[in-house]
Image 1 (cartoon, rainbow, N blue to C red):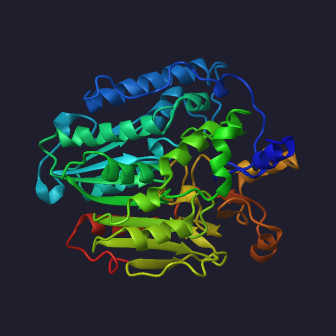
Image 2: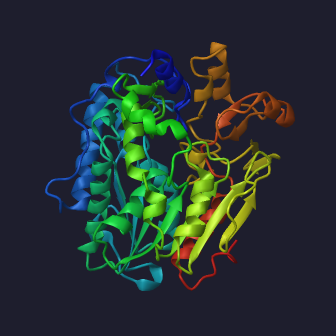
Length: 444
């Protein structure tokens, strides 16, 4: 491969959250030797898996991330805080606290599966919503191997392990006689894992439906197929300062290649999938191929209970997008929206924002973390700090806006969206979907 071709591919290949970066060095970008993997034995108790994962994450964080004695994360979290955020979890935490009252959700189970570079924290808003609606349900979130500790551990993790941890989560419910109905809730690559679980593995009859948020049926970048080759030349597609306590901010070529292997042929291999599905997609998603997700919804799903929530904005270009029954379009307004006493504006829905409530303590409208990565290591070094401070003229959206956007919206800083302004309606729709007697389309 010619040198210029390699440079061009390095420049163009991106998946979401990933553009740009700074050359931070050190132990963060090397395997820790203590990465989280599949529990052993494979039928290990889930509560023990949660406990062991928290301890392992904290050990690695204190060795690498907290070696200076100071918190490296925005929000000044302790290592214990971060371990709790990133670890797998179960609600209720103790098996002895599980109740069986059917009117309170007794007999229902939910397996939450996060996306690449993320942690189970990205599913916390959804988990809280489900727990409020079904206080007797059992809610579990797995941690994909290689995640939760340091980005360097992603260099040794791959799609086969991610498939296996998903299967472990499903089997934890399969062997639980209290659970009669199981729902898989996947975000981004977690959606692909949920689909693969239903398509490729021995799936229990308990699975009654899939909730797929920002589903990764196909990556947006067409050049992702070269990621495997690029991983032989360099480890990192992008490197950042790793200031987010809930997830990794850097992304490796190896992970991109494993993602490509995970989703290859998925949209074709699941044609005729006859299981109830609720999908929610941003038409402006910068990470996944949104039109392909919409095509998948229209052409691969055959269940009568299927709904796609399609978030549009003034920036959406979806002419020619497939049209079929079950699509509910939500038009986002970029006018100021109040949250408490603070107004904010959303230009369009970002990939990472969709599953998170505005009142989330970390990512929400008043959250400790503000995604200003597009200003990190570029141009004026004060831009990143000023973006962190925020202002009434800041705009939330998918990746950084153009000069034309800036003139049209009159913003000063463009922060990548970390919460969903339509979350309350999404929450109601998910609950309606689980309550199979409810009309999902009418619930909005």
